Image: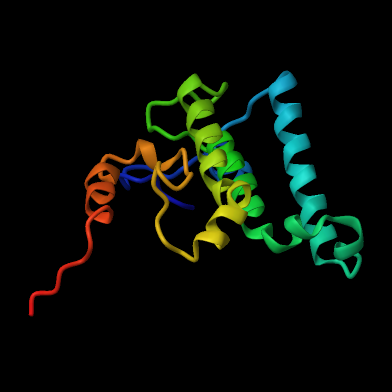
Length: 159
């Protein structure tokens, strides 16, 4: 028999089953429409992976989805990870609190940044984007203003 984390007493059969279930299916068990929604998202992710791995991926999916499948895959993974496992130790297990929804949706959108702005990223050649050359996201960065000020001046050599 196994012992608990503190090593004081052996775990009961029920506690062992709960431990196995939480590691297999996540530490949460949302019921009702939320549980159904998460099951549907998981099935859509699985279908996406199967279609992407099939020889028909180029026929069934647009080229932009095939080329940027990593970002889409990561978005599904982040969303489902925040839904299945509590983000905080104090989070409830029987429902999903609002902070986990916010982190899941924010993580999903951040993961999709490379897909949404793919053309701008490729067109810039890897150079950082500033508010003057078209990226609305760089205005959120606290260090974009000093960079813009420096880019307006020619680079000076120390020689």
